[in-house]
Length: 258
Image (cartoon, rainbow, N blue to C red; front, top):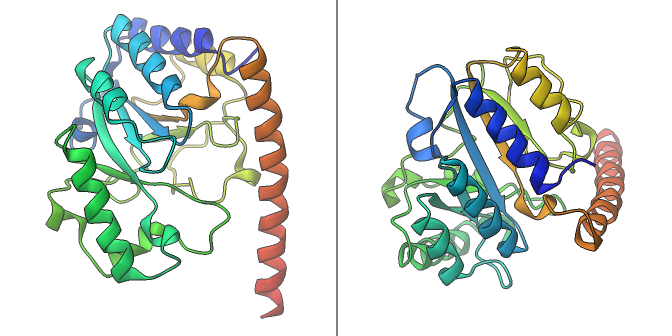
């Protein structure tokens, strides 16, 4: 079984054993050290999963970054504080332009409001876009009109990392290689390395066949113990993937007609 919390900890342990150092994103983006890993976690839903993952990472002696959406059922200041107390970084998983349907001024007002809310818990220095695949708006476009550095933000993964030097891998779509169901979580990679499964990822690490600098993007709700929650995530994500593929085809058809 893949996408279990046990398999995730095995992956982290294998990287540790190969001598990789783990840096939160606020440190990783400006580091040029070899054999470094950034564990980036997008907290889209089920925030309790994030606390559990953060606890396992703490036990393994590694630090990571948790980007929280500020929506009902996800943003939990007490839980975020617990994760920060374990030594992890907290950031803002923003989606304001999509949420405000392309209204830049309203989106910026909401961004400032949400950032202030999270900073009551943690001195946020980094942000990361949430894709909202069903929206026609890409929240990264907000920075065509504004500058996040004006809000004491030092880095955003889609703008401030050279992916010709950093191997980026994401579990978007509940797969390490589900590009057909990945609408926005993509980068211009300088690496041609396909990961078939987490077990395959671990094998490549153990064989010394992974790049020297890596960013691993995970969504903690995908990683569960075997059981009902694991199965529900499997079925739900498969349905979402089909919907995303159909959406891509529809948008492509509309684009050709125009």
